[in-house]
Length: 283
Picture 1: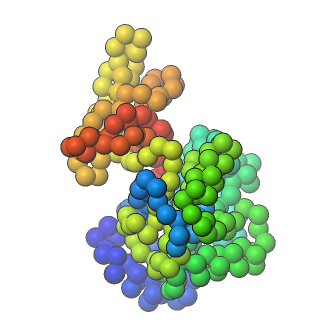
Picture 2: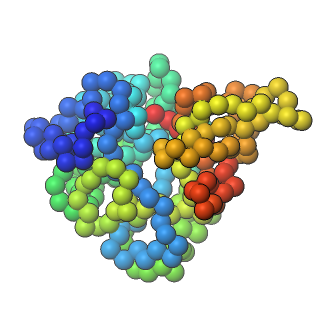
């Protein structure tokens, strides 16, 4: 699965019966559309804008709900039974500022019904469906109306006319406890991989990195984590030493796991500036 090209992946989707994607038979990263950071002063003309949810990415292939890594989500059968045969891409979400509770719920191997009855599946794309994103967004809205299930919702998408109004919307979302905004080209066909067709706009940039080592703490952190030694997908290695709670320093993300960090720009050699731990990446 990890060796599929973008063209092969979409061809496989198109060859299947409508609304059903066979999905991987073993854990393997899914070739999903990934966002790039929005450039400074981005003009939103031509984009549809939505809130960036602080949830867990989840792909429904018509049969199995999977994390971005390809690993199945241990969702309760009653939850997946309500999902349609159509392939969906979206975010499992509990609400603003509730990522930790969501993470705990979706990581359980034995799901708890009380937790899952609070989780919403915020759908933002229909992989394998032909046409522009604006048309796919309309189809998601129609699908959500047909299902009449409050736990599956179409992510609201709307045009924003100019950069000042985009900034005002970003400010309003952040003040209300949200992470930021997503900008998706309205005329974009569905593609896989990191693409400028999808942009994320946040007060801080964020990215993912692989934990390659734990650096022991000193002083007040003696006996627990001092920093994470991490490596990006591009091979850049650096330390992340801030942003941890006491509990995270006592029980840090294990070597081999992926974490999300925030940063403010990069050095001339590509090393993130002021990298700070945000959370362990699910999936």
